[in-house]
Amino acid sequence: MNLRKEKEYVKRIAKLAKANKELKLRLSELQKKLDKLLYENEKQKVLLESLSPEQKRKGKEVEHKIRTLRFDMATVLFADIQGFSKLSGKTDSQAIIDKLDEIFFEFDAIAKKYKIEKIKTIGDTYMCAGGIPIKNSTNPIDVIMAAIEMKHHMGKVQHECDFKEDQVWDMKMGIHTGPVVANVTGKRKVSYEIKGDTVNTASRIESASDTGNIVISVMTYELVKEFFICEYFGKIPVKYKGDMDMYVVKGLKPEISENGDGFTPNKAFRIKFALIQFTDLQEVILDKLEKELPEYLYYHNVKHTVDVVTEVELIGWAEGISDEEMLLLKTAALFHDVGHVIQYDNHEYHGTVIAREMLPKYGYTPEQIDRICEIIMATKLPPKPQNLLESIICDADLDYLGRTDFIPVSNTLYKELHEQNKIGSLNEWNKLQVKFISGHQYFTKTARSLREVNKQKQIERLSKLITEDN
Image (cartoon, rainbow, N blue to C red; front, side, top):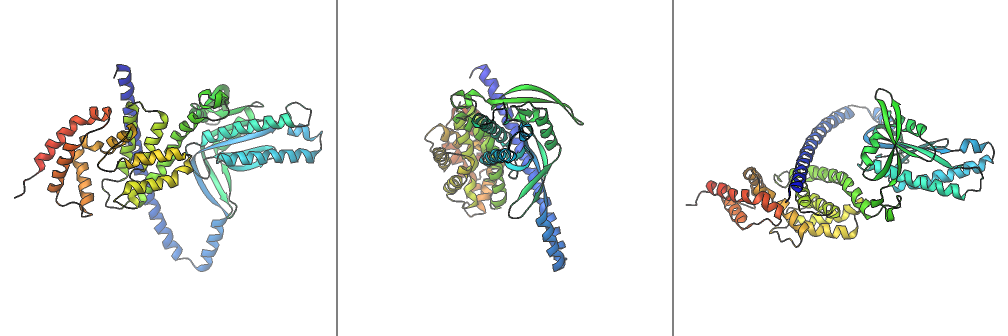
């Protein structure tokens, strides 16, 4: 490994260590929130029991009328149809309104395609938001992809229309990402009214935009700059925050669009997008593990899954795998122990069943899912990997064998097995561990260089703990 690669590797390790720490802090925060919610829920139950039937009925009516939700990251889009007001005074107004309705109908279909929530139309302005009602990490990308498609559709409308005026059906767009508060109304047909600085800023960006442009805030730009060609547009003053930079989106970067057309996503885009979306999938799975894992899983818990996901990324980059291979590997690591929510024995197989059920919803292809399931099954002991990705996950799964915290981690696995009557005394367990480690080998060059030496020390440490049977 040359000096440049070594420095890059050290940077990746530091980045992964930071990400691992952040995930652990996030888990701690989620647990605190859950405890608080459980406490509040108990208080509400006591309060509810004290209400009369009439008070309960009125309370339900109010609850159905309006609810308030907060979204920490949503992306708001305002699209203003240009030329409509000027044209409506010269041409049959009903025909113009019908055409506008057709445009908005197409916008609705585009919003639905990208899982964006239509908020409302205000005259000739269309408003929608990503990250509502389902929170996700990809909503800035989703909204800009929708904006590009809307702009493309408006180009077709302009080309096909019978009206002679230039740029009659053009439009301008403003996009901003940030927190919003949503008032939720309706029972069967739910609608969202969003408000806050994010909404106001998106509206102001749209007003400052030029006809034919998709203009985004610097906040949105920082989240999407790896996907789109953006050019600096200018600044707008923002109350209490000073001037805000704006950028014009020109289209997808050539390397992630079909034939470099800047419009049609290619496989490289889908892989890049899926790696961002992995954050959402990870949150869902970790939450599932937190809620559904049996209490006796002291080793195969959320922390272990986080450790394996982090470790496969570290080893994977060092082994030079591709972005798609990294996606498959991290996904397999995330699901490799989720089968424990169903059964302890044969949990690898149950993990593949859950993966096959969930992954299509996140855009994984059947071929990708098959490979992910093969990688998961490779973690079944004793490990017998058939390729590099399987070797990486096997090394990551047993990474603790060469870590300095081996003894306490090993003891959690013993406790887990002991409570299920799968192992006898701790002394017996330590003997088994010595035998297992002595016969174990790491499969990748990276793991061997990082852990093999420490693994030999573990045998010495364990041997000192073992007492001979009388």
